[in-house]
Image (cartoon, rainbow, N blue to C red):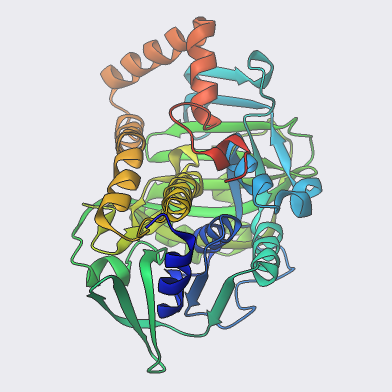
Length: 419
């Protein structure tokens, strides 16, 4: 199997080394990473070409951990968006109530306490997505089938075969599911899911404000759910407001002015007067976790593997950790002449992701349940815990490095290194 001539004979039997179901941010990143490692990749995206790309500001943005920024730089994408990124220099969290401001448990994380630089960057979707799609279009060894959909998959000796809605059949060593929380890839592979409904809805938008934010990200823990105020370039911030489902549904239907009137007492006046920019979105919050992230000839990444609460802004970052791990495992296997879709290779991916994936899923779930209430005993306990962390420099630095994605056994891409 280490004989290059042998691999040259075997490879043309397949349409690709890896077929990726889903061409959004995680799927596109995985395709680029695998292509950088020399793999032939087919991306099957049910949306038509260009449907995900719009130059207009719609309020959608992402908190990219420093490790995720390093991955994008290693993939050759960061240069195209660097000037449009807003560094996250500080993070401030605290308990609060609408109209009363921060009541206790204040934690201030300052990037100056670690050597690596900003803890992360805020990036608008209208900049990141086109940059990824442009890089994908130019990537050697990547074929994008836009407007197509996988309707069936079957594991056959030595490969997996997928059938498209058009009737076309493709074969590859591995099928990667990057097709979201309801992942048809996972379902067809017989992978069960554990789902939990938080009874909350996230209201997301962007606001312009009178005063500069100073690169500070705020997280206020309200009884009905957390409110994140995340800095964007200029005097603008991204809002992720988690509210109880019934009230959130009313707010989602309200006029812009009525929505602002409800937001102002929650937001506070520390940035001066606010006004909406772009459009508003609302989506129900829940936890959905695939019981396995690998099956025979199948691997899951991103929300297909785990969809978590946005309380720490780690959803996309978690998906990019999946990408970095799977891409490295597959690339190294191919270089050794191994079957990159074999059970032995996929077990390496599963084992590498296991602890980090479980720890972050439990942490975001636990934090939301702990902080989304107004129980005085819990409030006192959590405020005491946050205050203890705030008082110890070593703990603050640990929190910052965790938020930046710099802890644990990092794949090469998350270190900013080529595969």
